[in-house]
Image (tube, rainbow, N blue to C red; front, side, top):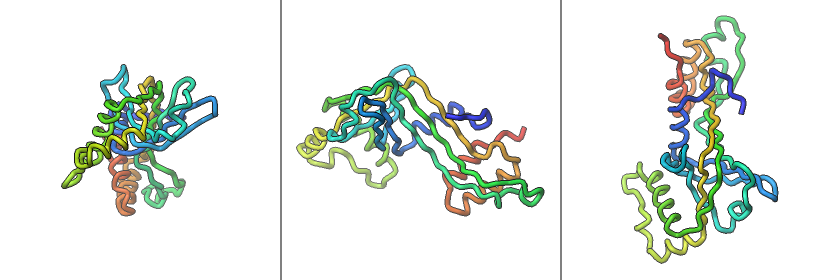
Length: 209
């Protein structure tokens, strides 16, 4: 990934991408060529030297049964949004401005481990559900469904774990703009309903001191 120095994501930004609830693309190189699946992951910082991303695939998905050659890749995407040059204070000063796109992303490389074990799968599903149900007034639990039904559902999936070897991450969040332009970007994104992107830009704002 091309990462200019001023857009390089720091440790906190990388951690925020890893722990955010959401789905990411798992990409593997196999004898059949590249295979990819969008699926939700849970980050386990204590697995391996650099942590791991854990999820599951449908048993009928060929990606788990086609051995991966070399490293596999998970592409995590944070909030992203179009940035209009009309939001820049610089537009009124000299007009030398163009549109762009703000985003945060992490390319997470690692070794893919397959888990065809009901106990591992049950734990992973509980962790994943817990992450996504945490904000609900009445969170759903795996125990709310009949045990026999859940057992059948677990037989239909296979666990996947990307044991992380390295991460390339980029946070392109207007850090290269003057402070007044950043103010305009935050206000513009907020006015368009992109509150998550606006918050990312504010967090990434270079220190004024």
